Length: 324
Image (cartoon, rainbow, N blue to C red; front, top):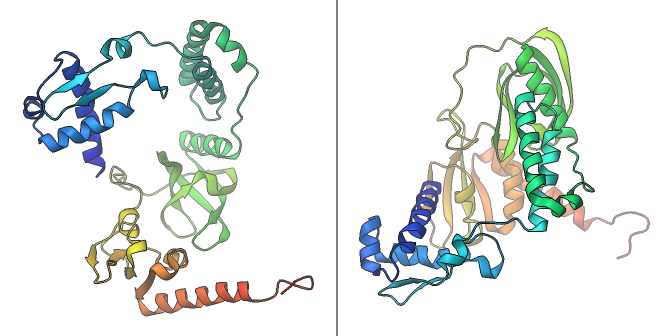
């Protein structure tokens, strides 16, 4: 799905240039030139009018078709040199200044950003004045990033207090950091001395962190390919079967799975693997009537128990001041 979206984006960028040079181009000719069907081309043309140089209506691409030919009514307006509006300049300047103060930012990158900010201020003119009265401060995650980055550079071990949402608990552990990376959030990949295994830690879930004097010595490990996403189940991970109704079909879109078989009621029977099956209890609670864990049996029973306890908590009086 992601690859198709990327291909479509690249195609539409080329399509804009192509149509600018060929006013009134025929739908069939354009489809053949791009190696797509006419239906795919029409789908692209339905999206292009929502694109432009800004979200202001007059800056959007005015492109339409009568089914035979394609017309672009405002190519000269869109091709005019871009000028930053005051709100756009303010947002860029505030963000640039905030990032330049981010802990862990390498000095060379910081200086390059400051030079770019100075040029933007000069170009923005009076609009830059408002930005000087605003500021953004990065707090805990920036400090954690700086400590991890320093630990990697100096090859030192870290002590962390980490929150695990699957277990709803804080654990203390020593880790040998391997690398920092971002997939939606910022993560540290490290060798965990508590579990004696490679683990991934989300920085915004690190409650406390401390740089230790011990040298970091993670075992020689092949770095994981993250191009397919952060969660990549192993064939050795325990198998879990979940059945969902029509309202729970989204599970197959968000969770990597081995199979998703159609059920008579419009739902799915989804088979997936996870190193921590207990973490799926939270999924079962979220699904409610739209789904249930089928196997393994102990996990299914555990999910039912948690659901009953949660329901009981709502049914019990809240205390002396409770009113029925």
